[in-house]
Length: 194
Image (cartoon, rainbow, N blue to C red; front, top):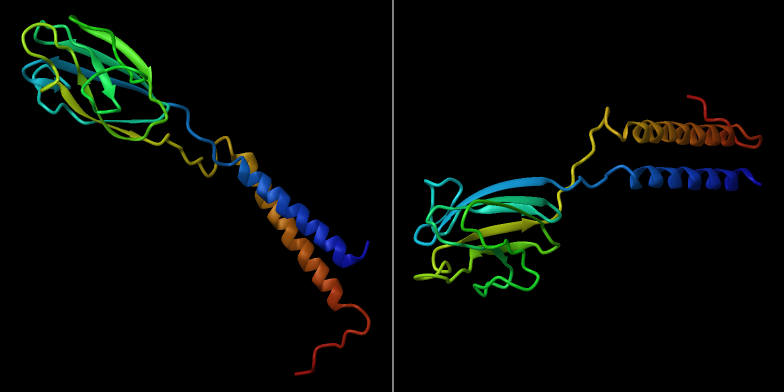
């Protein structure tokens, strides 16, 4: 194999190694466990405490894939039901995450599906005098799944980073040696005197 072809094969191998290193260097973060406490009242709305009730309720933010645990508590003695209303039709149902009815505190969890945007969370209960729809709602924003950049050194990618640096050093040395030998071939005129 001629020297130019050998250099091309070496360069191709180095490029493949660098691509391989970069393909494994940015893993996605694991899903987060997100605890949220909400207190609810048909007359006053939702709040993060029993004294901060308002309508709309406090804004919530989660990411696709998060494991959300809701601590739901009524403060008015009425049975409610929390849901994430993707369709904004003021009703819980279909594939929308919907808690069981609760007249006392309940812990309920769900995994955030692959739907991004800002939606309403609400209670759609209508039992008893009046209904929850008018006041028991708030906004929830669902963001794309989080990714965490890997630490530069000291993380799980340290070996890949060191291997990448070694490959780059070898590549630069190989190209320098190749061109140095090529310049020393017979028939190549020496540089002009100065």
